[in-house]
Length: 65
Image (cartoon, rainbow, N blue to C red; front, side, top):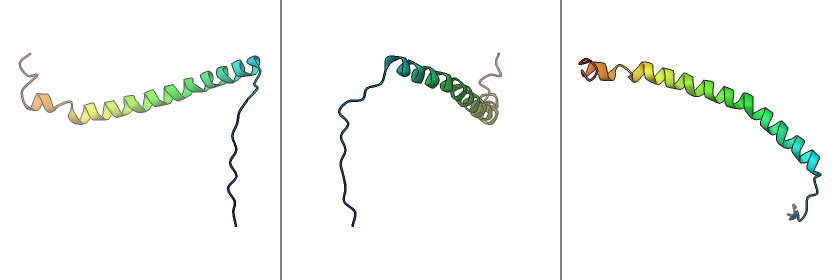
């Protein structure tokens, strides 16, 4: 039979220098993630522009210019 044990953290003591190193690592790890996300979003926008970009031309909205 399993018994549930509850744990409550009251104090975490991390030195300031170590905390700065952790934040720098997170920041550096976010750069490739942001690049990958922006590439995926731009690919999706390219696909949607290819699918729906000519809709205005079909209805003559951009043909006047």
